[in-house]
Each structure stands twice: as C-alpha cells, then as structure tokens.
Amino acid sequence: MGLGNPDPKYQNTYHNIGILAIRWLAKKWSGNKGIPPKWKKLKNLFQYTKIGALTFVEPLVHMNEIGKAAIAGFKRFKAAPAEFLVIQDDSDLSLGEFRLSFNRGSAGHKGVESIIKSLGNKGFWRMRIGIRKEAWERQKAGEFVLKEISPINKKIFLSVFEKIEETIKSAIQRESH
Image (cartoon, rainbow, N blue to C red):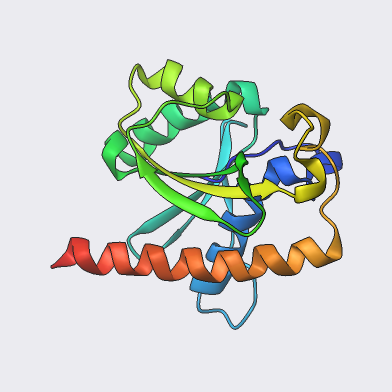
C-alpha cells in the first residue's frame, strides 16, 4: 500500500510519494510495455491491481483515515499484517534515502499512526522514502510535505523507486526459497 492523499491537488507532493511509488511499481511490473495496469475500486476505500502474486493498493481516503483502507484490504485479500508493505514518505530521512523496516512505531506519520491504531499492532513492513532536502533542515515536516515535487527531485525519486524495486525483488526471492 502506497500512502498519500487522494485529492488531485496533492498528487505530486512529497507526502504522496508512497502512492507515486506504488503506481510506478505496478506499471513497471504489469508487463504491458508501459501501459498502466487496470485498477479496481473497493467501497471508495482503496483501489488495487493484482500483478502475479502481488496486490498493489492505493488508498482513496485521506492520510488520517488510511487505517480503514488497510483493514478493508486485509479482509479483502485475507492477508496477515506481516505480509503487508506500506510505502511512505519519511521527513526524518534525507532526499534520496530509503529504509525497509518492520514492527516500528509511526514516528509521527499520521497515515502510519492510523494503520497501527486500526490494526492494534505495528507488525507490518514499511518502506520509508526520504523527502527532506538540506534547505528544509530547520523546518517542521508540515511546512514542506505538501509542496509540489520539483522536476529535479522527481528524477531522484525515480532512481529511488528503481532501488526499491530491486530490494523488493530480493526479498521476494529470499521468501520463495
């Protein structure tokens, strides 16, 4: 599940990097030579597309309510939290960095807080994508997460998405052995 807000005005903001990553991965893995996969909606909570054994999920609710979408996804796909990967922005990491973690607190991220609260535990995977630029060192996250992503930073994120793809592929290969 890629975290973000569904409103078009937030589409290309740093806070929506999780949704942008999910869309990029789904398109890349769909095998349709660059044609985006078909997405299906579930109760205006989320949309999803299945590619092989993977299900890509994009919430259709605001960040503070994403837990409702996550719970609906677990029920719909009969998944356990440990099988769940959340891709999110992280203002504590520098632009271009990413980290894979498991069973961690929200660190103040409202979407992750909503998921933890709805699940009643934090036993799921998180791919945290750094969004903090040096120029924003002294700013609070709320001051820059809803800014539009610059063209230069979009290129940085595409590079990060490629590295994340390799990390996920490696994890899947380890899991299947």
